[in-house]
Amino acid sequence: MVPIPNHNIYEKIGIAGLGAIGSAVARALTSEKGIGNMRLECISDPYAKNHFGVDKVSFEELTERSDLIIECLPAATVPELTKVVFAAGKDILFISAAALLNYPHILKELGVSKSHAYLPSGALCGLDGVLGMKEMGITSSKIASTKPPKGLKGAPYVVQNDLDLDAFTDKTLIFEGNAYDAAKGFPANVNVAASLSLAGIPADKTRVEVWVDPKATGNTHEITVKSDYSTLVSRIENLPDPANPKSSALAAQSIVATLRNMTSKLGIY
Image: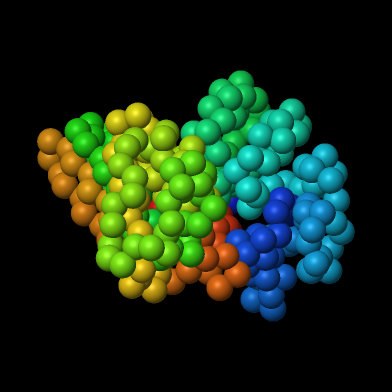
């Protein structure tokens, strides 16, 4: 997670996308415990069945009414949102890291806007160490992600290569390349790889492996990052989100944790 410049500037929170991740964040904001002084102001999702007691609005109205916009959208929809957010100079928290690689103009437009953007750790662990190692100079960075077949179905790379995921009987490597190619081939599956590249070395130098394992019950991510002074090895096993097998339940909670950090007297990064 990244440092937040002013912990008290975000009160009205708008969520774009009320799928599994967005709904989990909305529940945290509207729960009895809440998140500091933050409140859910409105949501934007034409298909949302649960409004969580707030208005369902357009991206434009969401941006106008919110201090901070939380993006929980399909990657292909992210540019439509950022165009509105950056034009208004509002701040945004991304969960679709792969969209930042697939649509590089987003980061260029962010750079010339008055907006700030935040990227939580998602389903990964160890990004704080990667950020520290980046200051020393990273020599290599690799992530290997393993998922059960249902977590990879429908991915463009799987469809284009006509892979029958149900035909695999053992753990099998189905993709090996850099983070750019991984984001294009698995936009709903490799936000972790995109996050690693954004925290560490460029996407074209960040190596990615995608494995399918019919015996896996969850999603596993292993990263190995090296510098001249340190070697970081991290492994995390996550159960899939019951509402979305392509994502880990931890991804939504990383957003909640980031919001709590913003409102805490003691920020841990």
